[in-house]
Figure 1 (cartoon, rainbow, N blue to C red):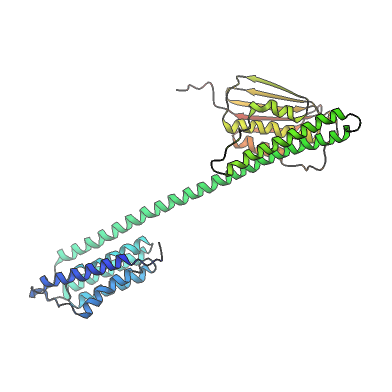
Figure 2: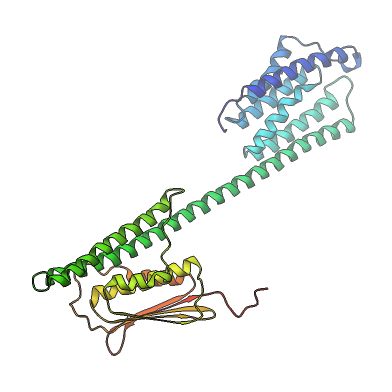
Length: 377
């Protein structure tokens, strides 16, 4: 995690650098032509500066890189044993690249290479040749290449996770919008129905109590249905909650019977199972159309035509406009027709709605279906 101090790696690197340098100096001190000096307190301090710096490499990668490179250069200038002192610079360069400080890392690597070339060519008793410089350049280039590969891989993984999170948020937003639309349709239809039946019951209560009883029974059933459908929609919020059957055109008879309107339903074409989204959209379009009739022309005769084509599902809902009661006021205009259009458009279909020349209102929707004429192979 960025900004966190890692105590384990610095200790391991410190032990490796100190122990490895002590072992290296036993060999190098016996070779007089190398001109190496034995480790003293200053040498041990310089060996430990690098590990201490990489302890904060994630919190301050550039500062850790500078301190590590400087301490390593000082160590070499004092002619101490030539050995694992380079472990700290490698880790510091790697961390700087991975953390996004690529320019500082490449500049640091270039400056360190120039120092080694000058040091090995002019500052030691027996200068090294081009082979030493080439080998060290290859070593630095390998370190930087590995660092860049790791950085690119991490960035790709982070981008993939970010895209996945955004996709999850988008799907959650779409699901919430769908649930809100479902709740709107359920509540609008059933509350309109309850309002109409309650008005009817109040009107008939004194003169025709037996008819008022029928209206009250319809109100009871409508309130029960709206609670059931609301539980079905809201249960989707709870993982693993039981789901009620999805509203579909197979429940059209229940819907028309519950509406309390004189409804005639005709179905043509080859009836077949529909995709869940298409089935639900068809049901909700009919439901919203009946709700509008209930609001604006209560008691009007309604004709529903469902047509199954080879490539599309046609839904037509017409009323004659001859409502037995005045339109209901106080329920607001709502978003019924725009909502129906959105449902149809979301599936790639279309919907038109408007008054008919001879009176009444018509809703005509077309929803796409899989092509039955296409070869399934």
